Amino acid sequence: MIETLYGQILELDAAASSVTIECAGVGFRVTVTSRTLSSLPAPAFAPDGTKLASPPVRIWTHLALREDAADLYGFADREELTMYRLLLTVSGVGPKAGLSILSLLPPKKLAFAVANGDTKAIAKAPGVGEKTAAMVVLKLKDKIPKQFPAFFMGPADDGEIPAPKKKGSSGAMADARDALAALGYSRSEIASALKYADEGAEADEIIRTALAVLLKT
Image 1 (cartoon, one colour):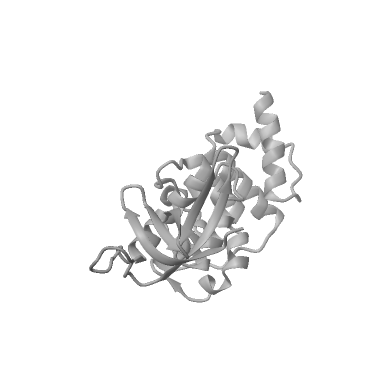
Image 2 (image 1 turned 90 degrees about the vertical axis):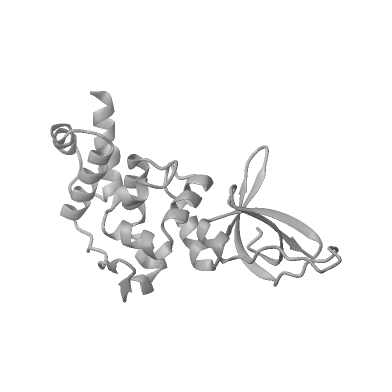
């Protein structure tokens, strides 16, 4: 796994939100978030044009392997990389969608949106719809406080991040109801399907049970 790259910026492509960083004579092309892109220096060369003169930078990276490609995604710091990897644990969020979300909402603002159930803010990211945004909130509302406890000890840029709610059967049922509503089901359909769910189960299990009922009807 390539965790970081340390070198000088050789090329910067703002349109593609990508950079080429030269490390020990090897150039790595990295797709980055808009926050990371804005933090990087422009390429600079010595007067004779043969050597790079820009200051060295460190980019934290995630390597996404596919059958026909190996893509590097880059981040300004470990915090942004950690949040990106959390996003990739959500069904429906791939490498590009995760980058799109973080380009719109830096880690602390994303934590704020998830804690407040603000699916509309997340869905504004290109390539991310309401259903995917709802899954991000559902899957990460408990994970983010564990990974980033400092976010919940002070004010966010847009206000106070609420502490995560204590788990309970009513809370899990409410979370499941909200997630199903985000998927487009009506209140009557949801109420009917939730009758078959175990009230003491976690939200994920309740949703799976409800969806199994809804998909049969």
